[in-house]
Structures are given as C-alpha cells and as structure tokens.
Image 1 (cartoon, rainbow, N blue to C red):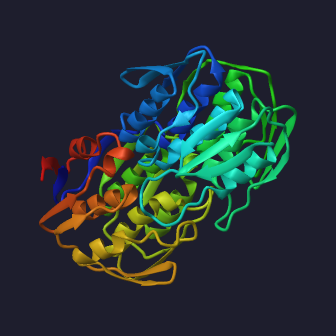
Image 2 (cartoon, rainbow, N blue to C red):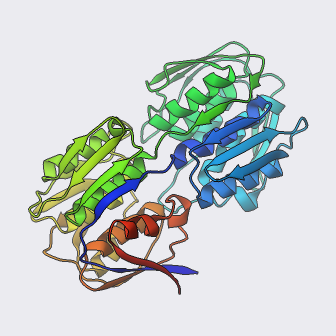
Length: 420
C-alpha cells in the first residue's frame, strides 16, 4: 500500500493541465451500452474508477480498448445483464449501468453499490424513476433486479431529502432514451456532468431537451448509434488546484478548464482575498499573504460543490478569523476534521457545520485519508504545513485524481509517493 509524503512550505508556481471529468466519463461509458456500434471517448483520465467501469463493461460483454486518453467501446450483440458485487461494491457510480441495461435488454441485475464512506446515499430515487417508467423491481441477496418488457415514458419527480440526485438523473435519463413516448424529469440535477452526458446521448440519436435545468424532457427513440465524444474538464480537479494555489500563496495557471463550472468556488476565493482571472479555457490564480475568513454552504449545482468542501476547509484552517463550513448535501462528510486537527487545525463540529478558527501555521503529521476528497484536503494541508506530512490510504486518491503528486511536483511541491 502506498503513502504520500509532503515537505510543506513551498509556493506553487507554473502551469497545470486539468484532466477529463471523472463524474462525466463514468456515466458516459455506461451509456455506450445503449448504442449499436462503436463509440470513441476522448479526454478520459487514467483513474482507478475508470478502470473499474471498464472491467464492469467487459463482464457485460462489451469490447473495450484503451489508447492513452482515448477509449474505444463496442457492445456485443448479446450483452449480459448482471453487474457483479465484486466490482460494483467498490464504486457507487457503477450503479448507472442499471438504466442502460434495462432500457436495452429489458432486464438488469446490479449489485447495490459501494464507494467512499461519507454518509448514507440511498438508491431510492433511481428505483422510483424506473418504476415510473414501468419496470418491476425486487431486491434480493444484495442485488437490485429490474425487468420491463417495454419501458414507457412518464412524468417523474426526482426530489430527495438533500435535493436533486445527479446519478439518479443520469440513470433515468439514459433509461428513457429507448422508452416508448415522452419522459419528463422534474427536479433534475443541473450539474455540468449531466449536460455532458446529455450531449453524448444526443449525438447517439437521443431526443433530449432541458439538460442543465431542473426539467429534462426525453422523447424515446427506437435505437442509438455509437459516436465520438470528448469529455468535459473536471471541475473538481480544477477547484482542487485552485485551492492548492491559494493555500500556498502560489501563482498557478490552470489549462483545459471551463471557468463558469467553478463560479461558486471563484466567488468564495475572491471574497477570501485570492486574485483570480478567467479566460476562455484557463484560470489564473494568485494567492495572497493576507486571507479573509468566509462562510460556505454546500448546495447542488450551481451552488458550492460538496466535493470541494474538504479542500476549502483546509484553506480556512490557516485563514485568520472564524469561518463556518456547512454541509447540506452529505451532513456526515466531516471525517477529515479529526485528521486536520492532528495537524494543529482548530475546528469543532456543530451539527452539519464546521466552525473553524484559523491558525498561523499547521504542523506536519501522519494522517489517514478516509475518502477521495478528504485525501486531497490532507495533501493541501500538507503543502503548507511545517515539516513532513505523511498521508496514508491514498488508494482513495487514485479513484479521482490523475497523477496528482506528479502535477503538484511540477508546480514546485516537495511531494512523493512511497510504499508504506
């Protein structure tokens, strides 16, 4: 098992290229199950989650070949309908093969998903949507069994206790593409990854309107074809490097980005005193010596993303004054707080909020990553901490960041990956 070791105290400077969006490419790969013929997906990051999705597709009799950042996908004429526990249990996004399988084959058997331990993330909205389309559903031995002779379009409200669901919106949108008639998804997720998936499906021949809004309409078609598609840049990776520049008082130009996808973060960093300039596909971030505390509340897009909550928390730990970070999406997503406290952070939890009193400096320490974004937060803290920080369980990191330590090293960080 690997660990990442960081010698803190160095400003980040230079240019960094942002990879394709993990949360786009995974459902797009699942959507290739709907197509007749080969699809080519470009700008695909080299991540553990992508490798897991490729393995799942291969178990379903899909031919998959990879060439650097390009993936060729061609479903067999006779697909399998069972996505096994061994793979699905390791990654929640793999559950999005459910909709395409039911729509294409009329049946699916998919293990209840796993992934990072950041609080309950139920699958009820996925099942509610498929039932509305006419599917019959049973849950037995840890598997969701879905069957439908013919899916039929319906009006579906996807409201959950924490707002709209990105993965459920994607699953139902994919299932509806081959359903008979019109489907209307109300309270749909608006995230850029949903829009990217809709663009991919539209290229395939789907009729979709309203992606990016809370009302998506899909008119079912008889068949879809394989197409060529380039995945959008990863807005969470973008945000992580922006915060890395801010926390180290650095000077970093980020390339291959969509600036408007990070408007909520840009607003908060600007309020904190960070200098940010936006260009067509670049963002320039200049950190400042004097930062200001801010209050942040995570919300569905276009609000502040929950996947950047841990990282902005690390920045506020060294920002003078009192900051409040409130988690509205996953209220239990504060496991990284105890590890930041080991580094000298002054944080206490009050319900779904973290109250942070900024300190002058953090101190390097051995820390344990609990999930993907917590891993990134601990590395950011290590970049600015005095002395050496060792981050353990970095296999979480490999699920969502492509060559993070290499990119940070190229910006001037003293960071290396080692065997424990």
